[in-house]
Length: 298
Image (cartoon, rainbow, N blue to C red; front, side, top):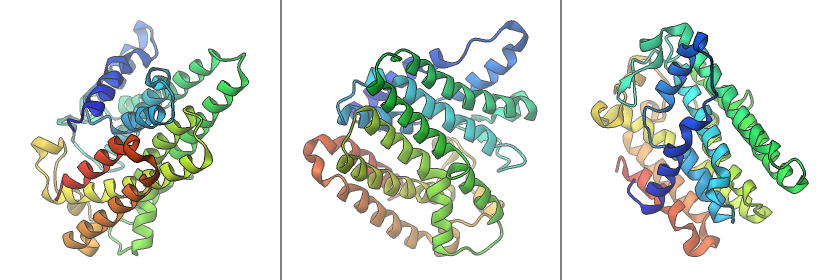
């Protein structure tokens, strides 16, 4: 994505991400190395960029939102490390590099994921402590922490992941597939969008519109990912293609075909764009993100 705002916000994330990794002593340096290996290996930084973008849209300085944007990327990276493990998706390539467990071993990879997850909450709560005399600032920050905790937990991301594992080799209804996608993938994207809105003290109408945008975009994002697994080039996607078929995963493409997947992506993209109708030109960057994601495979 080459939109000036995407480039600017991604650079802001990249320039500050490592600073939020907690210091460790020499006796546990391998843990930090494993955490940093996956965290700093590149990627779109989509979730933190969306958080910063919606924060700015709702009137919050992006720099003030950095601890929360970094936390989102920490949580996302932890989930990727654990997803790639042999007990889960058993992947050997991520972002064009060997997966964490291929480099550091399974035990260290598990701990690296655990470290990133807990470091996310350390970064956010450390920021809260800076505002301990201001109840309004504390409330909006705790709303973000609750938002992200719920999205990463057993009601959302983990629920989607266990349902995804249990669906392997089965024919799922569209309702069940979208349950998996909404929770496994869209939940954290939606939480990132809503977190930026909370930091900007958005009103109820704005929060509702951004929630529809996040949910629709997040669901479309996962179906795009399914298509890329079929059509993608590992040198571009950074992942080995054809893994879903190899693992007999239940995906939208596998069950309904590529044409139906494309049509569903169009529907969801249109829904995400319609949710931004009230934002006039202030919503142009979010519109760009949704359209660009759709055009990755069309």
